[in-house]
Image (tube, rainbow, N blue to C red; front, side, top):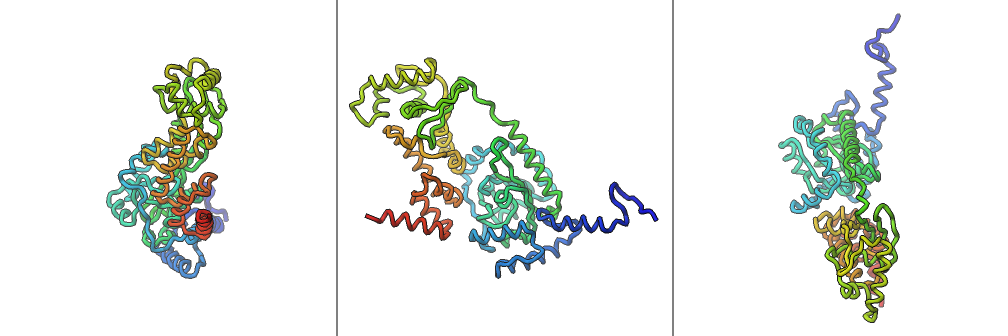
Length: 441
């Protein structure tokens, strides 16, 4: 007897096919709840598995592999199941941090694609940065109030290393879309919630900028919510690509001086590696568009007071030959076109309170081998201000990033701050070694 066809590729009596589809859903580690499953029963099973893990350290079925791996990372990071998120960005700093963040440019798109869905479905739209800190939380008013009781609020840090398994934090940690259902959350107070999040990348560099998340009730455990946030993230990346800045005009100067002994200058479409003295001159002139006199430059550049103006004029003549006569004027000495530098970018971000963005842009000390008095003062001041901002922020990821750089590996201040917020054996050992060196005669 012929089978009756009821849909494209589906037969009424094709039981093995339906079983195969159901098994595929069950074995897909990124789908939180297969179609037809009972959310209440799955929650009970997950709670028992969560208790087993927190008490014995073993993961029981049917915990998904992605969740099991996240629970283990959470435990290694020292997260406790009764913990809570901490607010790391004060209200007064939040606007400045948002304004500096690349995802601010696609917030209108997020609201257009997800705003109505969140409001009508009693859900929340949330966007975090690459460190898991929530920058925007919007949506249904009553849901926002409920979420506020667990510190799911702008400025709070929801990195996996801080609050355990959760969609935005875990999406950033594993760099792929993630759905987290109910008791899959590592912290108990978050277990009444379900969320789905997808990372958003810089379309030019591929770097993770943060994640877009939808948070609400059990209904979000459907596979469609995972596909939805993934599609929104891809749309945001496409939009960012369209918004990428135009290449600078040829009459603009771009100067790269952080972490380099010799500056790199882009002028009129040319990339020029400058000598050390010319690097110092460009740094000083770029910061004083009104110009500097010869005497001011002598004091700024030379430790040896016996250096004559003739020596300085010879250096400036050589620099004019490199730049072209139209770019360097005299009486006073000044650049005739605007200059953008990586140094200025870090200073602006620090001034705005955007510490993460400043630390990301900081490629190392300013012209580290320069002994020019004025350059050394700028270099030391920038490093001191950034170090102070990092230690005050107490973000373990930012502190660890600094501590493991060539310029931060011996920075005892930062290692002390890191040990206070992430006291692992490795961190404590390194701090002890540094303090022992300081105490040695």
